[in-house]
Image (cartoon, rainbow, N blue to C red; front, side, top):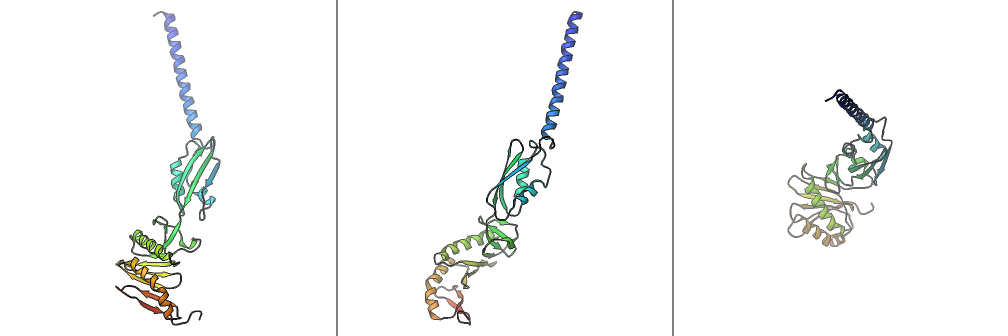
Length: 242
């Protein structure tokens, strides 16, 4: 290799190295720019979904509970988990929209009932830790052994579906450790159904109710249906309206 050729080779190699260094510096600068919150900050949040208990401020507070980073660095899954950590949120989805916006869709919990006076059950029969005192409207109270909420919900729903045919509504439903059921209706009547044949006993109550009411002008206190045939009826001592 001649001196001229060596010179040209070294010059070319030097230029190649300079180009590589330039590319490396450029990549580092680009990466730092993309992850730098000051360069590409998230400046807007769009919150969608029908909500009763969760405000926009609640959602934003959950988002900024931890640094989000830049638009590109923001972790959508981590943000979603923080939003879903709010007590009244059932699920959430997070989408980034160029150049600086988060779009969040929130699905709220639908309270089905109050569970053991302290927790709430959603429409899927799942427990969630929100304050029952904030429930809008009236929901029934369900009581039962811890760990058996799904069974209590199942029994409540099937019995309520039958009672609804006669326009009766349960306001309180209790199941003991031995799975005996008693419930209280909006009308003030207590039904004692026991552990067996609950639907059949509920139907018997509905069939006999007109006859029972015809026996006295007093209000019915309870109907005990824990018999193979017939019922036991308790009455309030006062006349209706007294």
